[in-house]
Image 1: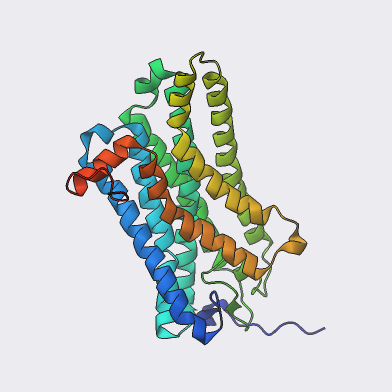
Image 2: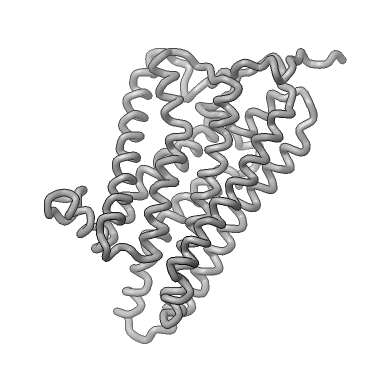
Length: 317
């Protein structure tokens, strides 16, 4: 059997992103919907960052990590959606080789950072509820900055390594990616050279970015639940749980969307299902996060109100 038609990796000038739909009459609607969601995502996360930065009462570890989560969400969405919108607007579905690698790097880095920050925020709630007397020491400004720096390093290095490993891959002449962004798994399916190292890297990154943070989050909430149920007062239990409500909602949405797709049998996988999952955790959840953290948090409502002329919240009159 003859080998597939191959092109040298240095000769690969671009890839073709097939997008969400190949129907021309659906493109204007898709452009309007995703432009609207992107603008809401950017505005919501920017307002969270501004509210926390401008209100001294919110200069605490919990809100420090929330501001960084909002920044990460905005960057995560910006790594893919603007390119998709530009492709729809220009009716051009290509992405250059260098753009594809850059997009892949930023998606891996900010996606991993999102997971890492969710785990650190769970640890913050664990210390606040289970070890309140040691909270100021365990969550000092220096330690918070150190944990944030570690998150950046732990997500940046594997993302950079995976991207550099892709530069060694030889791609086939067929360059169509059945997605709206440079999905690493779909990209490797276009390879004509050996990709075992790249596939091993994807598994390793999955363990680092998904499994490990999730285990830390589960451990934190098991300890939190144990401590909360030890409180005799129902009001005290509710107050303790209410401080975790927003974070737990985001965790359930984020990891629930991933598990609902990727833990299904391989026979049920399809390009359309994976596109819907990607839209959920790359676009919809980052868009909803500011609503979740502000609507359930009185301090955030008050801080956001100060930015909007004294109103209680920018979502409600």
